[in-house]
Length: 280
View 1: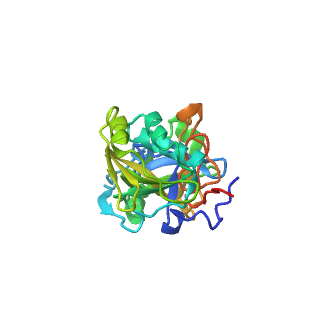
View 2 (view 1 turned 90 degrees about the horizontal axis):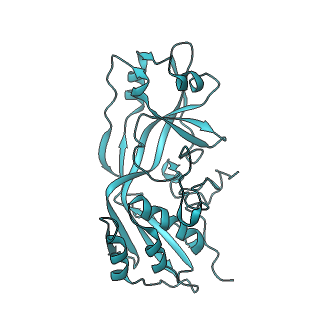
View 3 (view 1 turned 135 degrees about the vertical axis):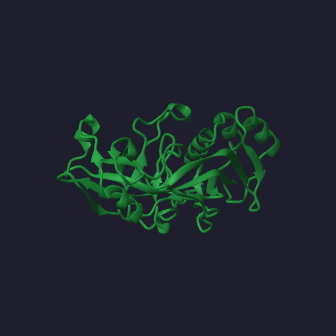
């Protein structure tokens, strides 16, 4: 089990967020999940599907930029791990990762950052007002199974989203490694509407037309004697929102939790603060 207090785990935790293990659509405020394996949340659905209240569901505030997170880069990650991340990010944007990976075949290390980060959120008070009066779908078998005082259930209050990411490649000497940008554009455009541009730092930025959630904040709640009780907000980095059944990734691997870092992809996963061990 990873140590969530490791000071290397810093990229999102220092901003107060937990990780969505595989960036994907559908994760939004009022998403409900339950805790598995001490750290991993598994999505159950959307709270209004099982909670009827005279107070309408709070409408998320959207379009808020998060400039201090957008553009923040990871440390250099070993190529084998970085290529797993690259593969899954490209797939999340809708492109075929195989040709993209081939363009980075000479890299010894990769570093990543998210671009144009936006947040979507509801306030704790708005959630509390919504939960103050209403009726839970007690006959729902999933409600009967998971909405017990002994279970740990969470309601998402905020997500960070991005429609693109940047990647910088490095050779064995730690020098920046150029890629064939026209070839990369040709590979990507064959499968998806993704823009590929050079970045101001010498890397490459990929931008799609869909904003994908990659980080979140959630409140732990419990249903106790016909009323909601708030337990707490977990410390940043304590939990991760996983997929119910990890989807296949490049090379026949699976998206898995590993070390509890900030982005977890492919046959392994990555702490977004873990430095690559390049060379001797």
